[in-house]
Length: 487
Image 1: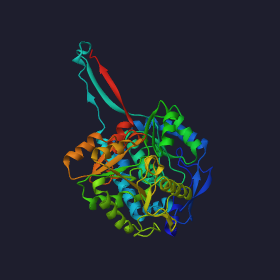
Image 2: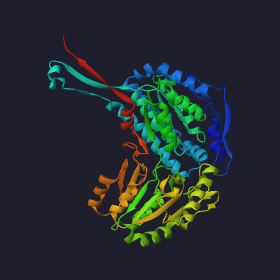
Image 3: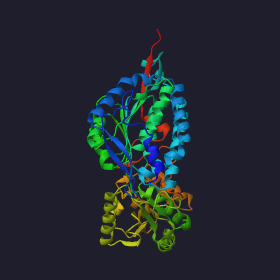
Image 4: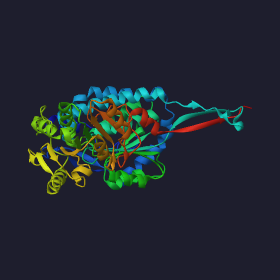
């Protein structure tokens, strides 16, 4: 792990930003570089009492944050954007070190993060209500009605390890735009970027007349998370992570609002008229970014059987283009998973699929601490490598007799986040948009395509609610109806 990342990490203020200051009555645990296991930094580990203190502090300033002017909230968001841009290169280095993602992937994450803060700032001006024609009913004759949007209250934001800076930003920025304080809990393996982000946000808040408690960070284990999501005084929980944990959070938090961006096993469908070169290019770009640790990375590839052989030939001929190894090197496209336990699980799933009849066309082994880009053919639908979220640089191919069968195969999954279809037919594109039971349908591009201003989220076990600044702000505000009978 490079000294520059260690130096960056050491400059992050010590402790946890809780209340108006920082808590340093903490234990510390190492954050390790997934590529070689070297220690990046010692990060604070919160306990239950820290979660409780953060909730108390957030509740205490909720009314003050709700009364911040639109101009103040917008100014905070734009100042954070400015500071993120100033330290853009340093954030890239820090993300490489704590996530093990490649340099190109971390650069994309930081650029998207900066845009997300800018987009949230612009949405502050679009939070509004409407008049209601109460006199449509006789009882409302002569009355005036309108509704406005009010902050939902204290938000709990819990983010995954795979995009810690971007995921935290998609929770913090809309919360501030909506007028809500937030307590953010990063993944235990990747707290550093979130801690630095929170320090930037708190400084921007104080410079614009807002309390630093507008953002707090609590690290720690599952019990810390449970304390955060079960307090009856919170307004909403926004969670990004696995389906199993998300479902438990929904049960624990009820009846408070939950926004759940959960897992998936994103599918790419190749129709008989598809441009196969572009479809193969999409698999190379969309199946292995973030080292495959993305919920909308391509996992399932369903190819109409008339073009299966040609597609497989083209894909296996190009899979070697993906350079494996040290994520600090600009040429690297696939690097190690977040930890050894994940690597062991994925290799077991590949072996299970092979034992059930799948063919390993490429990869399936570890090279330079990294699971090689792996291509499986004829994976049974019951195998974990097909039906569950593998979260690794592994894609699985099956054939279908026609487009209708391919779309049906996509829908048989318990997940439904994004899916894509490669076709030259406009009729096929609209059929896919109409029939696929997912949160987003992408035509002739990777299912991992995400504009940070679009509504993003899933159906079925992939979650509920939508991210993207406009849509997250709507989720984090509630309508308040005003009914007036003039005297």
